[in-house]
Length: 203
Image (cartoon, rainbow, N blue to C red; front, side, top):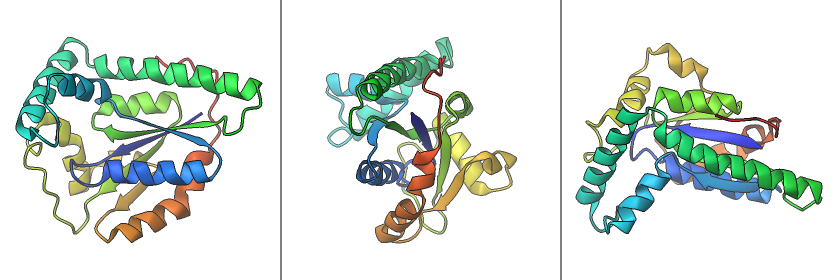
C-alpha cells in the first residue's frame, strides 16, 4: 500500500491533482482510492442538506464549526476516523494479494492535508507528500481564506518555512491543466511506486 498526501490552499487544485493521479495509477495497474480527512464531515454536511455546490455558505459554516469542535475535543479525531478506512483498505489489499487478484496494490490519495498532525499521520505510512502551490496564479478562496485550516498552507506558500523542505515534491499550479497533467504523468511512477509495509499498524 502506498499513500499520497496533497497539501495546499483551498482552491489551488488539490482535488484535480488527486483525480489525475488516480487516473494514472489505475492505468499503471494499481487500484487508486481517493480519501480526505474531512470526508466524514462532508458527508454529514450533505445529509444535513448543506451541499458545497448549492449552499456554499451553510456548507462552510457547518464544516468549520463541527470540524473545529471535534478537533478541540481530540486533535486527531478526524484522523482516527480516516485511519479506520485505511486499515480496512490494507486488509482488503492483503486479501487480494493472497488471491493473486489483478490490481491488488492500493494507492491511497488524500487530497486535503491541512494540519501538522495530518502530515505526521502520513509519516506512519511513509507517505509521499506533495505541496501544491498557487505560484503566480491568484487563488480565490474567500469562504475559507481566514480559517485556521488554511494557516499551514499560507505559511508554506509564503516561503521561508523549513517545513516545506520535508515535502516529497512541490508543484506550482499556475499554468494550464495540461501542465499539471504532464507533471503527473512524469512523476506518478515515483509517487505510487514506493514499497510500504502492508503490516503497518497505523494509529
